[in-house]
Structures are given as C-alpha cells and as structure tokens.
Image (cartoon, rainbow, N blue to C red; front, side, top):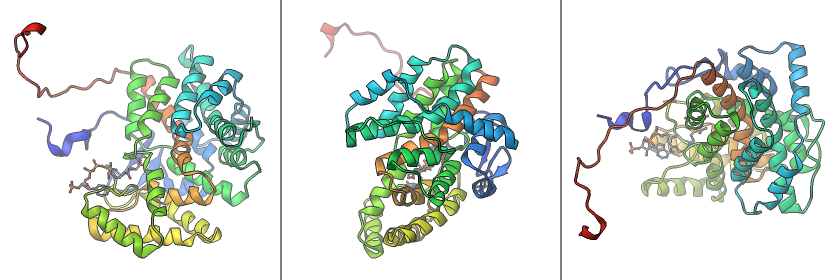
Length: 373
Ligand SMILES: CC(=O)SCCNC(=O)CCNC(=O)[C@H](O)C(C)(C)COP(=O)(O)OP(=O)(O)OC[C@H]1O[C@@H](n2cnc3c(N)ncnc32)[C@H](O)[C@@H]1OP(=O)(O)O
Ligand SMILES: O=C([O-])CC(=O)C(=O)O
C-alpha cells in the first residue's frame, strides 16, 4: 500500500547515478564529486558540461577544443528555420524548443548510439540559436544570423538576443546560472528522459521528454512564475500582505520548497548574490527588496526556503531576458545533465517500468451497449 509520504515516489530510490548527489543530508550538491560552490566560483559552463558528459574535469586543450566544437554547431538547417517561421508568435518558447528539438531529430537523426555525444553538443549549441531565430522573426520581423564567434553559450545567447556582445560580467552572471541549472540527479525531467532512453529510444526523444516535463510550474516553469509574482507587487510591504493572502487562500508560492532539500537549496545562495548585484546595477533594487521580503515571509509563515528558481528570476530579468524565456534557459543548461543521464542509462540499461497498485473496480461482466442503464 502506497503511503502519503511515498506518493509522487517521494523518498523512493529509483536507480543509481554517478552524476550528482542532491541533498544527501537534506542539503548540499556536488556534480561528480565537485561542490556546486566551487564549480560556480571557478568553472565555466562549458567546463561543467564536459565534466558531466565525460566524468572528469577537462584539461586545458580539451576545453579549448570542446568550446570550438560547440561554436561550430550553432547553425540551423533551412527546413528548421522555415518551421520556426511557421510557428505562431504567441507560442510559448518552451514549445518552440520542444518542437525545434523534434525537427532537428528528423533532419539529423541519431542512427546509432555512437552519435550520442555529437548530438548532445549539437543541441547544447543550437538551442539558443533556435530560440533567438524564432524570437527575432516573430517579434522584430528579422531573419537573424545565428552564428556568433562568442566563445561561451551564455555570451552567444545574450549576443543573439540583444544584437550586440554582452559585457563580461553579464555573460558571467548567465554562465553561473547555467552551471547551477546543469544537473540535479533524478528530478522529474531527468527521470522522464531516462525512462524514454530506457526503451532504447533516441537522444532527441529523451530530450523532448525532458523539455515537456520541465515546462510545468512545479518544476522548471517556477522561474517564470516567480518573476510574475515578484513583479505583481509595487513594494516589499505590498508583497508581504500579498503573500500572506495567497497562503491564506492555500496557494503555493512558486520558487519555494523542494522535494529533496529540507533547509536550504545551496544554489539559491549563489544566485541570490548575483540578483543583488544586478538589481543594484540596473536600478531595480525594489525587485530585490520585494524578493527578500517574500523570502522572509515564507520562512516565518511556512518554514520554507527559496529554491534555485526564485532568485534566478530577477537575475534573468536584469539581463533583459523576456520572462517567457526563463525556463528555456533551464533547458540550455539541463541539456548537459539530461544527455549525461541518457549516456549513463544506456551504459547499463534495463527498461524502467514500475508497478502500480490497482485501486479500481473488481472483475465485472461486460454489458452490451444497448443493455446499459
Ligand atoms: C529547480 C526546480 O525545479 S525546484 C522546484 C521548483 N518548483 C517550485 O518552486 C514550485 C513550488 N513548490 C512546490 O510546489 C513544492 O515545494 C515542490 C513541488 C517543489 C515539492 O513538492 P513536494 O515534495 O511534493 O511537497 P508538497 O507539495 O507535498 O508540500 C509539502 C507541504 O508544504 C507546502 N508547500 C510546499 N511548497 C510550497 C510552496 N511553494 N508554497 C506554499 N506551500 C508549499 C505544501 O502545501 C504542503 O503543505 P501541507 O502538508 O500543509 O499540505
Ligand atoms: O531536483 C528537483 O526535484 C528539482 C530541481 O531542483 C532541479 O531539477 O534542479
């Protein structure tokens, strides 16, 4: 009998991974043994992606080659551009990426698992191109060039979005965010991607599964919902009253709580510092004050703490990124984690197919349609 605490597979160990440890003691996060604090302080996203995909930190030459290989995979085939042009301007950018991934899987299919690494690089490189091509076509009437010579995915995206290279510290802010979002053990989207991989399906299908699962507000969609919440208040006092009212109405406050962490999401402290720096620099300190007040109210009223999504929202906002592109940024980063999990699943595969506890009616006689009451 499934107990309430096990509903949603809470606390159920569903497999093994060597990729990351999440909240082993209710807190703390490592990628392949390296702490998230060290990685976000000293590494680049490309370095972390290599670590996840290969198991070790790259040597200098390996990182240079990897970054070059990523740079060379930013172009989009014409049929994919045409489909991006056909999608409505009102589509959610997550749906655009989900579709773009699927289309690329038709145009450049994975014929064998030997291509998995190549395809992971291709998706890491081309997701920012897909999103910005669609965005500028529909919101500015432009068919943009999607290849830049920026040596990072963060810089490439900001350059495509804004039409000019970003200042170094802004590229770094996004780079750190991508590191924090890159991997998180058996979260819902990664587990879903692993299920798809376990049927011996292709990598594109696994990533499409991941994107579809990430989209919801209980998972990646929470960063967009957090921004909507923060922006809905004019100041910290209004935010305090507003959150109290929402809690009284039994509403969830997006960007708070976590299935695995019990006291703190270690990624939140890192991104909160960036939020303060950028809100200060862009004269948007009110947004930061509102965020801090919501955090204080959530601690006082519910004993809950912000997860990665909450302060990421204001960081992305200060970088001039439209709110509907926040969850796609999660996709750019998590493609590294999803891909590494698919590689791991494939290396020791067994179909993932759990059992269900049946709670429906007992056996009954079939009633022909004209005899049904
Ligand atoms: C990067 C990421 O994807 S991190 C997750 C992003 N998602 C969010 O921020 C969405 C908001 N948070 C939540 O919905 C939850 O905390 C989850 C989905 C992250 C974890 O869910 P679960 O482990 O299933 O916890 P569950 O939803 O059962 O919550 C336990 C209790 O805390 C409350 N609670 C949990 N999170 C919140 C919240 N954000 N706001 C208000 N109450 C909350 C629940 O209402 C519940 O209270 P109850 O026992 O009185 O009914
Ligand atoms: O682990 C989870 O459940 C959600 C999360 O924080 C992530 O995917 O980064």
